[in-house]
Image (cartoon, rainbow, N blue to C red; front, side, top):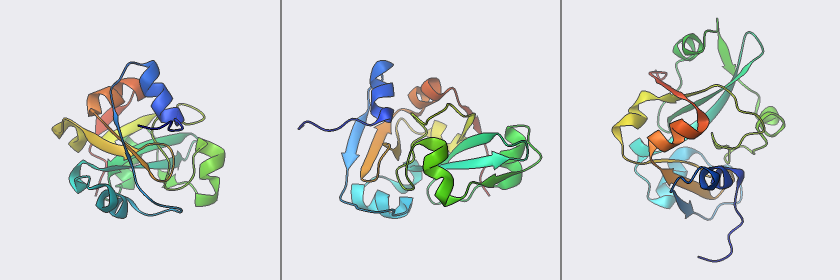
Length: 158
């Protein structure tokens, strides 16, 4: 492999001695997870998107859910002890996470936010998540992800 620029997500995994694979794909701007899976050949059911929401309290939360699914806002709020949560505005993604839309990884955000991963991730020996920039997907064991981001599993989809 050539001299690839590492993302924060990759540096964190390496610092924690976690093995991972990188899948790069050609893409200049935001595309959704379904198109990303198509470009990388990743199985749709093992591909997860990273969503950032804000609770009534003002606290931010990260939800990692299958790309073909929608978050159940009531269930998502309940898992973190909030009355309600809502998606942050697209224009605020970079300011809050340090990442751009379409390249937002649950690893290596500006701050460590409470994170919930959909329980279906447990069913796989590896899952596909954003690598921290558009055009990069990271493949890793869900348990390794959980350890590094100190997340919990829950049923948070509709």
